[in-house]
Length: 118
Image 1: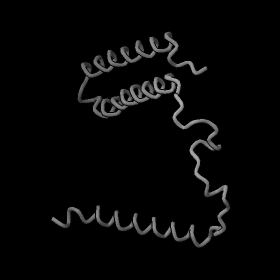
Image 2 (image 1 turned 180 degrees about the vertical axis):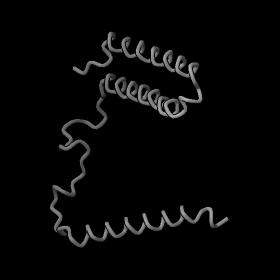
Image 3 (image 1 turned 90 degrees about the horizontal axis):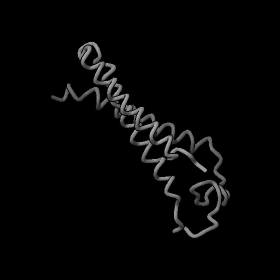
């Protein structure tokens, strides 16, 4: 039983050791002087100048949701491409229909202006 998990254990030990070695090399060779600008908290590269509870434009969320939807749907292409010889013509037609629906959805979003960022 242990022999089946030995490669995983070896991989974890080597990767953990490499992570620690690289961390200590960075600490040893890096400059130890910290200036206030480097240690200041930031989120977007500049100091906050408005209330942190301000409203975001809804288009920000729409673009994020659209990205997630299309990205996850494209992820279905990888297993299909690997098993294309097993699924045959039926799988090819099914994926063609799936991609056609994706294209129709993409064109609809494009025409509605959901991808515009003004």
